[in-house]
Image (cartoon, rainbow, N blue to C red):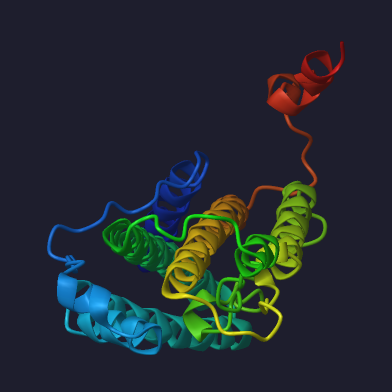
Length: 296
């Protein structure tokens, strides 16, 4: 074998092994940056605005913030990363031999980068939702509790909270399973684990789409007070936080898929027979002891 091929195989083996190790543990979410901030003020001027203008004023204030700029930049980078994933996937499908292995490795590395960007996006969304909730609660306190009673409209609001904005309605929030299709072959020892993780992702996506907070709610088609409107806005952002948490679970499963892909690539590079049975020690997993912890 030419020296260049030996060198390439050695590099691929090391890289694939590194990716497998990285994704063998739960995926760590990106830490929020110090520069992305939004600090709206629940001023008297904002309190006095009509309800129909209040949200517009808050949205305009957000758009001028460093947090909004960081959000836009991250979303732009995510879209570009998705294009890169698509190009690499197509190129790997057409390639053969050493080039195919190299492209598969690049695809895994880009998937890892995509997950990091999505984790960052989740952090920003969480920060935005928490800031809005804090703002709306502050405005409610300024308005006072003179109408604190549970009116019929308020009861209806509590029962039918307007859902968070549609899950995965923006391209950056979609789970693109086509791009995360595995190169793990059906005969690989990792194929079963891969299939389980794909099924878990699909189940989570289905659960998000069917979540009660995803339904558009109305308050009997009647206008509501400013206090009720603020409660409604706060509820929307509470639902947004719940959505982010669910989507983070999906990222965790995606990370597991990348880890399995990396193990399969390592086998392809080393020429390991995928039908080789694991050693006795490899069969001892946490899953095998689950029954002892769920039974009484």
